[in-house]
Amino acid sequence: MVSFCEAVYDGEKKVEGVTAKLVHSPEEITLAWREDKIPLLVDPKAGIRNALKLDVLVDAILAKRNLGTSIKDASLVIGLGPGFTAGKDVHAVIETNRGHNLGRMILTGGAEPNTGIPGEIAGFTAERVFRAPRAGKFLNVKEIGARAIGGGGSGGYPVPLQQVRDCGAALSLPKTDRRIFLCILCANRVRRSSKEAGCLGDLC
Image 1 (cartoon, rainbow, N blue to C red):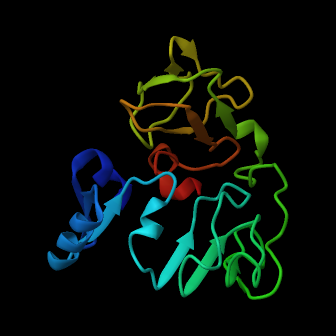
Image 2 (image 1 turned 180 degrees about the vertical axis):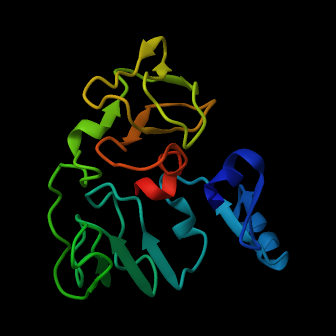
């Protein structure tokens, strides 16, 4: 499992022949474009909107609410999930809730409301999501895709798996100091060989 976001830690990341490069300023964005690379900027407040004249802006934060995106931010502004209203704060909304309308473009109104319940995987919803009790550094004890019977830890606190026993593929990025969100994709009740159950793609 790879994505362009790994460039934040590695400087650059290539996915299917396309390279993303970590940048820190508008000037470096232009240089990355000249190198035929995708510039990746860590910008929590999206201040880059004020430095570049954007043709298209996609708010894919998935915060379930609008954190400040405006329909005036670009010629075309798209918001993913609930919290946006097409025609008011964005030009279009993309449905992110699982089901028949997933991925549908909405040009009037908004997406389905946030249910507060994670999508079901192998019969589990809220039981498969664990949040750390405090901020800290996550230390991996399993590789991505490995079977997880026990739990990891954060800041000296164990991450329990009692609600979902003998299952799971642990997902986390090591060496990060931030509020930890640990998602366990459950394979319990799924009758597959150990090889298949160890494949993250099979659990989605």
